[in-house]
Length: 193
Image 1 (tube, rainbow, N blue to C red):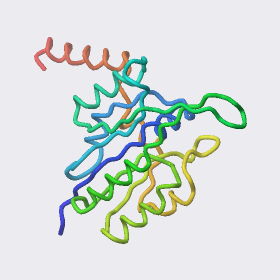
Image 2: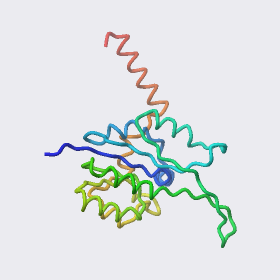
Image 3: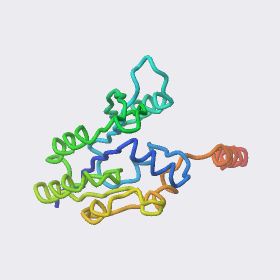
Image 4: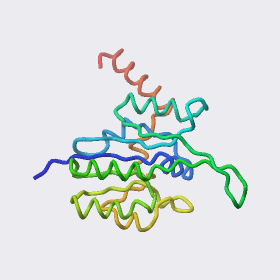
């Protein structure tokens, strides 16, 4: 029997939108690496960022990810003027990059975990299943209003995990919890534990 080898792909903007819609707290990305079974072959986070000279609140997180076992695939956002509304919009779609890397890594994986609800990935998931026999788990949410996952992607996945159900296992420890853990350790140590 083939051992379980997993690659994780996170659509950064899609995950951010889901977390915001649900009002969930921050994620500990190191916990994601230890949550899924088997050997983690690759863990990739995809994001579009403004040019380096422009400030972005995402840069510290990208640095954190790169130093903690994640590959970060990024590209610069592009600005354009919507011809109808005349408003300046920012675009930074990473679908092509995610698709290309999933297909490149497929021969080395038994499982892929996709953090995205984007229906554009449905055909890719079908291809991974059909051509490579890969088990695809999709992580998104049906519990937000509106739902953040395309129904066709959820149905195509071998397994669907709602981020609401996963969040307790991968959330960042808040200051209160971290302090409680430290206090408990000090207590055990001081009492010979």
